[in-house]
Length: 212
Image 1: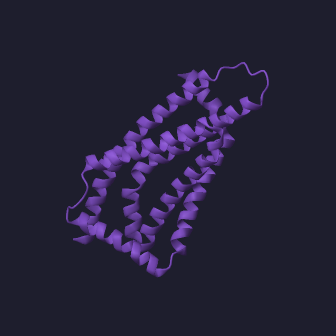
Image 2: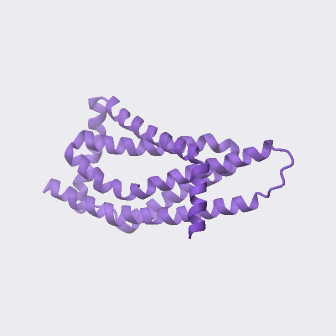
Image 3: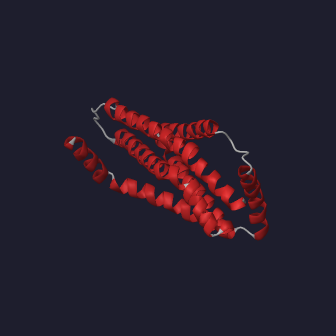
């Protein structure tokens, strides 16, 4: 156990700059998402809020998507996203796309929370905390780790291309890279479960209390 902890500590210390870059990139996306909400004019906000209001009305009447359907859709979304990032890490030229994906992930979170809070005030803050926070407490670290690993593996491949007399095999690093991504995929299933059975249920209760 101590050996694993030491290896984890050594990994984080060695690649701290990369993980910090990934975190800053994601936070930048969140900030831009919030700015995007504030840059929308009144008509644009009302048009978007119309669909949100209709969704809340249907939810208050019990017309919601089944938990299993939400779980399946969320699981497939995370699996697709992580698989793409995994493949991008295998190709050096795909590294900029990893950055774009992380930025867009932050942008979506920032815009979603920002818009709900902007339109509903303290109710929106409470709603965002219940419907968005539970799964994202796990999803965000998963994507940050995935992005960091993709960068590390891609840069290691790039380093091998420019190093002469390279004798180290790529098989062992690839096995570790693949194994960690499998673990991240399994964790994303837990996040999908939180979204489908915890966050969605809590949101239904809260929305019904708003409209009753």
